Amino acid sequence: MIENNNRNNRENLHSLLSRIPSVEEVLQLEELKLPASQYSRKMITPLVRLVLEEERERIKSGSVPSPLRDITDRCASLIAKEFQSFIRPVINGTGVILHTNLGRAVLGQTIIDDSLPSLAGYCNLEYDLFQGVRGKRGDFVEKMLALFSQTESSLILNNNAAAVFLILKVLAKGKEVIISRGELVQIGGGFRIPEILKESGAILREVGTTNQTNLDDYEKAINENTALLLKVHQSNFSLEGFSESVEVGELKALGEKYNLPVVVDLGSGTFLPTEQFDLLHEPMVQEMIRCGADLVCFSADKLLGGPQGGIVCGRKEYISQIRKDPLYRTFRVGKITLSLLQSTLLFYLQGRTLQELPVWRMISLPAQEIKKRSHSLARTLRKRDIPTQVSQGISLVGGGSLPGKTLSTYLVSIETDGNVDQLDRRLRMSNPAVLGRVKDNRLFFDLRTIEPKFDKKLIELISAAFTKNMNNKG
Picture 1 (cartoon, rainbow, N blue to C red):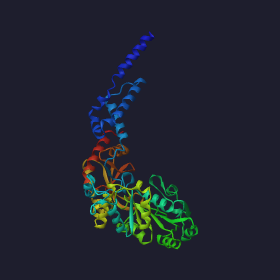
Picture 2 (picture 1 turned 30 degrees about the vertical axis):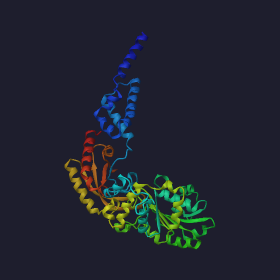
Picture 3 (picture 1 turned 180 degrees about the vertical axis):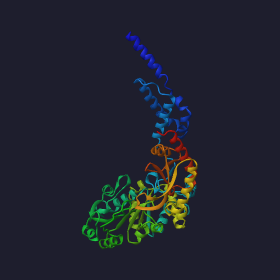
Picture 4 (picture 1 turned 120 degrees about the horizontal axis):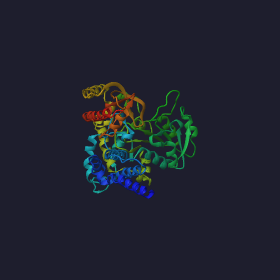
C-alpha cells in the first residue's frame, strides 16, 4: 500500500514537472524576442534556465505549477534586473547638469559628428603627416590646451585622479607635500586626497585647521624634505562662516622664497567665468596660471564639457618629467578621447562654446524659456488626462562643481492615483530610460537637462507609463 502511494506520488510529481515549459519554448515566446535581440540569446538563456529551475524546486516543495504567463513575467523581470547596467540612452529630467551617474558632461551631436570620421577609420594618432614619420600622440590637442590656459605646456591623462597621482609621484615621492587640513577632500567613489598622497609615495603634511589656515601655517611646516605646496579646490563642498584660506598668489610667493612648486587641483576646471550665468565665481584654469600656479590639474568631463579625462597645465619642465615617468603610459588616453577633446577645445577657441557644448547651453538657458516649454508639455499631458502642474524650482550644476549653487528653473510634475514610485520605475525601465525626481508623492521633471528634441518622446513615454500605472494601481 505504501509502495503504491509512493509510486502514485512520483507519477503525480512527474506529471506536474512535465508541465514546465522547455527553455526553447520560453525563448520562442513573443515577450522574450525583444530582449533576445537586444542582448543575444546566449546572454538570456542562462537566466531562463534559472527561472525554470526555481519553478522545478517550487513544484517539488508542493506548490502548484505556475501559469506560463507568470513564468514569462519572471524571466522578463530577471532579464531586466540583470541587464539594468547595459549602457543605453537616458533622458535626464533630474535637473542635475553634470550628473556623475549619467556620464557627467553631455557631448552633443556636433562633437560626435566632427569626431566620427577620425574614429571610424584610421587616423594620425601618432603620425606626423607633414614629415612622414612617427609623431607625438595628442600633440595638437595639448597645444590647444596650453594656448587657451595661457601656459607653457599641457598633458592629457585618463582622469583627474591619475593626474593628481602622477604629479605627486613624480614631484614628491618620498618627500613631504604641504596641504591645508580644510582641503583634504573626498570626491565621489571614495577618492580621497590623503589616500592618493599615500599611494603616490608622497608624505602628507597637514597645516592649519578645518576652517582656518593662513600663510604662516604653510611657512612653519616647510623643511628640507618639503617637495611642493598643494592647494585643492573645494569643488564639491563649501566652507562658510568663520573661515580663512590662502590664495594661490600668496602660495606662489612663498614657493619662490623656498624654491618649491605650487600645484593646484582645481577639480572641475572651468575656462569660462561662471558669474555671467548668475552663479558665484568658480576659479578658472587660466586664472590659476596667472596667479602663479606651476601646475593646475582638472577633469575634462565636468565644466570643460568634454569626454572623461584628466588634464595638467603648467610649466614645461614639470610636464616633461611627468611624461617621462613609466606610469604615464598606463594613464594615457587613446584616439577616442583625443578626437572628442579636440572638437571640444576647438569650440572654445572659435568662440562657439554656448552654441555647441550642451553643458554650457544648459547652464546658460534662461528660466523663462524653460517655463514656456514646461507649460507646453504640461498642456499636452493634461489633454491625455494626466494631472500635470508647472512650478518653480532649482537646477544643480552637479559633478562636484559649484556646491550649493543653483540655477532658477521650472518643473513639470505629475500626480498619480497609483504608486508614484512604480511610475518612476516604469519610466526608468523604458527605452530610452527616463529619470526624474520623486517628492511629495509627485514625479518632477526639469526640462533644463532635457533637450527639446526629446519632448515628443518624453510625452509618449510618460503617457504609456502613466496608463500602465493606473491600470495596475493598488
